[in-house]
Image (cartoon, rainbow, N blue to C red; front, side, top):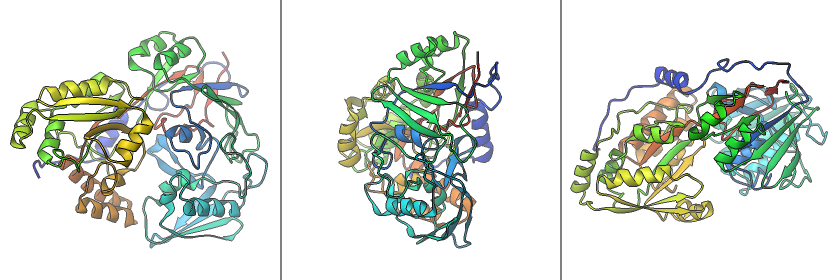
Length: 503
């Protein structure tokens, strides 16, 4: 290996990141006025789901809108508590000492939005269908499940073929959602979940409206209605906030933030995400098969300057973000050094190198523009191909036909991509694959985290990609709004606890 770096760990650094990068509970002024239970909460978002079928349609926008709000699983995750696993449709669970048997106690009094009582059969059928039907999103996440059974009306037992320490986390995803057995709902246009909100209406291209479900098993939602207002243009979103059309605006453009703050009606919150802005190298295509070239490209990038350019971000310097197990701060593993980059390119015989960056056109031009300039400084000509997302999925993700690529990998606990040689990164390291398998199979959380950290060091040390930054988007929260969530809002937006006060 070309570079070996002593790495500092973890718990203290995670704490420091949490303190410096998110606005903690209670730091925003408490809303004045009385809480209005009949209020409508209007939230501005950028990405709209193409339909409502969360089982068969990809895209983070569906999870953001529907999971925890409309649909639920046995368990869920608390983004504002380091993604801790918490009860949902199960009140408690036990795991056998060998890590193979998960026994869940079902919550009583749960009904679907059509008024039908949820039963153990609904849970078993939902999970079995998700496992058996490959067209269901994340079906493969349940491949390790050997059996799903209900010994009585209040219990569901899942047995694994082999231990998987991330299994509970898996059940917080789409494959773990519970649906009514034999439901005839048209899920493309409607919904029938167990959550605190129903889908009241959808105005394609504009908004999705959720209404409080009064038959909800838990604490009733704090507002009568939520309008998710889809505004892809960030300038237009800021204008909507300034004009009073929004109570909350997600992913506020930092350059326009002062306009929102100037109204005196909003505070700006910043939270952690697992949104990794990844510069992918095609590890199977020359000259990127040469580690010297990959390292040179990383050394050519001034990550601190890039973060200053993007603003709503922080440096990451490794494949695992702070909210995920196995995180270590790998700062210093690659430091900006264009002279060293030029030397490595010369050693590799790659002077006057020409490469193409394939990037979906949904992203702003600031990052590719920065990369073009950075690489030019070390003698690398970078051509930028901006394509629609469907083309990116076909050419890059499916066919692996690219040199460099950029997307934001928003998923939590997705380090397994680096242990999958068929993934579009093309990274193939047997040691990393073995460490990841061991990390999944152990029942000891600390041991699993340590194994993941060890694997991540190898991935970083071999320059398998460059982690340009970790997105820390800014949310404008109205001064009349309380309890709005802070972390991972681009993938989960639980709104039941949010309240709006009267003027």
